[in-house]
Image (cartoon, rainbow over all chains, first blue to last red; front, side, top):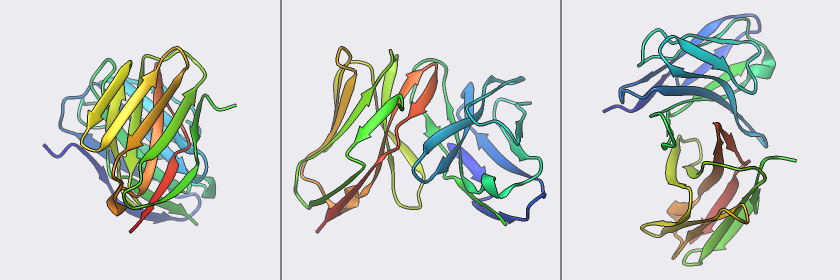
Length: 112
Length: 106
């Protein structure tokens, strides 16, 4: 099993550009989440999904969209990148119930 | 006030020392997680616990539900243990502490 795979690992964008961060898992996990990690702030939840076709907002959803058309994939879209979205983004998945989270390796995103 | 507080924020120790990192939370939870993040690296789940104590190698995690407190202990610390250790609690969603940066010097 590859676990949780995130692409790309690094990306530099200009303000106003759009892009999609990809996340895929091969563990048949129901739950998938996107977090951003900023210095001194810990991990914050952007969006999450409890199954295919179901998504919901987390703590900091503004400026981001998600979709969950399959169990395996959970892409995160930046609609119009802003410097405040410069961060490290982590995708995670887990089975339903109180189960350990499995994290991807992260995407380091810089918005100029 | 954050729902999850970790202490200390930074910890430097010598190889071989016994390490304790603390986590306090303010709400009822269904589970508590300890995670490890190496510099520039991904995040790995170390423990998930809802009561008592768990041990894996040199790592021990304890939780006291009544006191809303958990500790992560590392015995015979080694430079490769240098990482950020993150406490997170499950209250429907996962809520994270800000992490403890641990540096073990040889």
